[in-house]
Length: 134
Length: 91
Image: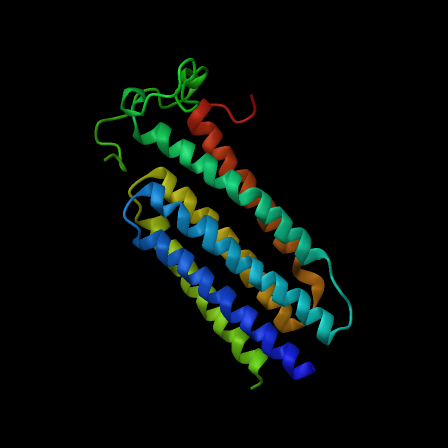
């Protein structure tokens, strides 16, 4: 029983490590900024998720108490990872694309990155040599 | 060396390598947002490393540190994006 649980925990740890490494590898190797967002936001949270489940299982099997802290951290990460990805994507749009280069939004709408209130941003015009422009 | 120890060291190595790749991305990045994304990934990898350390020591003492890392990493990333988009963090 103990050995079986150990194998399960070890498998979770190995999966978590591989996912974390793949996320960072994607961050370095993918061609442009918007695709690079995919590496960390998906793979790294999946990796951390497996490590947290492994930690819960370890304390349950070896120390006979179920700790809920991991669940809390996992919940927090799963809630914040999409928000972080969205905000970094918006910042990238604002830093690298001029308003007229973006596709036309549906009638009556405007891009939040260049809409009302964007004139208070420190970057009001995108330089021609901004990184990440296609 | 038990199977659990081997898996722990494997995961430590993976996340350490991931941390180094992110550090490379922080130093050599084409733009601002790449650097911030890499820093955010570094905090996520750090959470995993501290959790692994907690498993190795067999103590639940390190969860407060991971929680702090998660919160500070999230708030700093959002603060950067808000500053770029609006020039003001708390409107």
